[in-house]
Length: 174
Image (cartoon, rainbow, N blue to C red; front, side, top):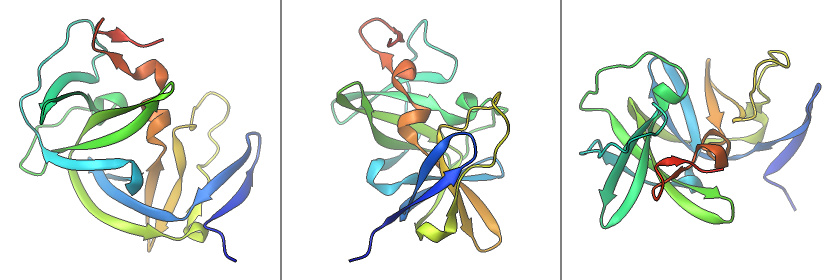
């Protein structure tokens, strides 16, 4: 019986798992990223976003998506990238993450969605070591597709508990 994951030792941080899976790929500037397709709920066009006071700069506000209020995060801002004009290709990827013990839907503003790729486990490498001062816990791995590399994100880490916005208080959850 085959398995879909393999463990790779990584110097200094123990072992990480390479996940053979399907990934939705998208761009922020010239960089290509991927999210596990099982975390993606839907892709929508950028719509009216209601700003919430006292939230971090990367939290753009909330949207009403078929009666559900969903917080929206600008991934460019979250990753410390320069802002860019929104285009017709800009969109919101709605992802499902875990906040403590509950599931939370969050919208991610991206420049454009590329495609869904099936990436084999042997094509995923651990993130490169940048030293202890650089946190790469939010990276599942580096997907090698031909001559290009896709940064595969662990969206639960990107939007970790400390980053989830409490709509009741307008402050980051603790």
